[in-house]
Image (cartoon, rainbow, N blue to C red; front, top):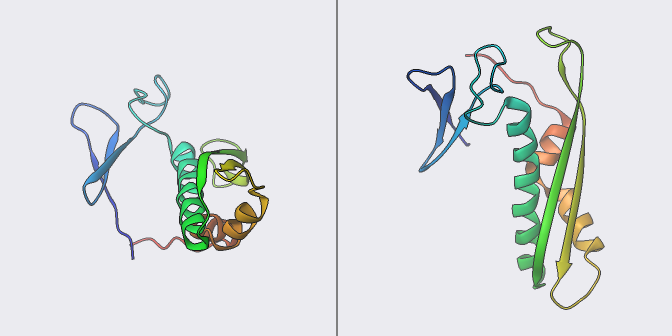
Length: 134
């Protein structure tokens, strides 16, 4: 189980998220409903979670297979549906574009494919899961 906590930041409408010894600031864009642009908005945090998990999983898979991974890049674009501020507003799709190079010059397509099958956050979001309150 992973547990995080967000706490308000005095003098702002932003919140500091903490997980172990790491932190991140969540805020709305400057000028948008009290936001000051001090950190990432929720959509950005979701895209960062999808892409960050995949980048970590790609490196882990390369290690597991004894392959040497060089540079990598993961871009995630979220598409939203519904009107802002309504229950219908949600992410309706995400497009992830990973690219990487193998130090031996081989094609990384199979490594990317294998990683996509086991990437925890990608597979969780793709399958959907309940978010209980309380």
